[in-house]
Length: 261
Image (cartoon, rainbow, N blue to C red; front, side, top):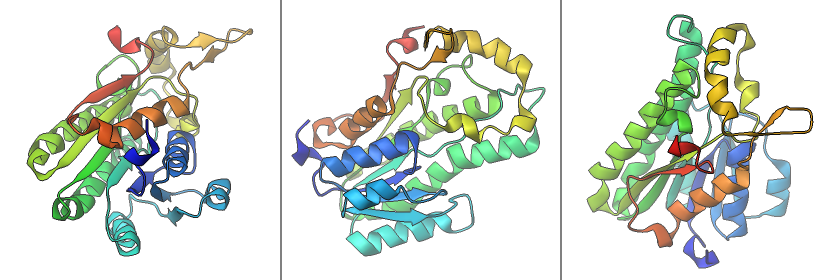
C-alpha cells in the first residue's frame, strides 16, 4: 500500500496502548497519518517518543460523556476526523446463558458494543460535514459464530457486526464508509481482561475445541495463535485507505481460513 493512501489522515484509535490497537496506531504513524490514541491504560511511551504525530488521551470511555470529550479534543486539535478505529475490547469468562453474571454481561457489552456505537455517533457529524470518512470496527470470529467464545463476548461482537452494516448503509451517500475486521485468535493481552471469578470451565471446555482447530501448538503442546497483531493492523489500514474507497459494509476475516468452517 502506498504511504499516500493514509498520509495526513486524522485517525482515532481506541485501545492504543496494547495489542491490536497498539499495532494499528504504530502502522498508521509509520504511514504518516496523524493518530489520536485513546486508552484506559497508560500511554504507550515508545510510540509517543518515536512519533511526534501521536497524541494520547487517557480515558475510560464507558464513563458518562467520556466519548464526547475525547472526540471533541481530537476535533479541536486537528480540525477534522478522517478515520475511527474501534479497537478496544474485553473478554468474558467463557460464560454460557445459564452462568453469565449480570456484572460481567454489562461490562462486556459496554466496552465492546456501547462504546463503539457512541464513538460512531460522536464522529459522524464531523464526517458528514466534510463529506467523507472511514470507520473500522474490530469485531471477531465470534461476531459471526456461536461456537468460539462466551455468550457476552459473542453477543457483543454480533451486535458490532450488525451496527457496522447499519452505519454503512445509512451513511453511504454521505461519503462515509463503515467496515469491520473479524480477527481469529490473536496473541494479545485480552485474556487479562477476563474476570476469573466469573470463569466458566464447562463453557471453556465446550468452545475451546473450535479454537484449537485454528491455532498451532508449541513444542510443549500449548496452543499458539497464528495470527499476529500486525496482520490485523494491515487489514484495518487497508480498509481506512483510499484503495478501499468502494468497500463499504464489509466484514473481512483475518484468520487464515478459520472462517471457512
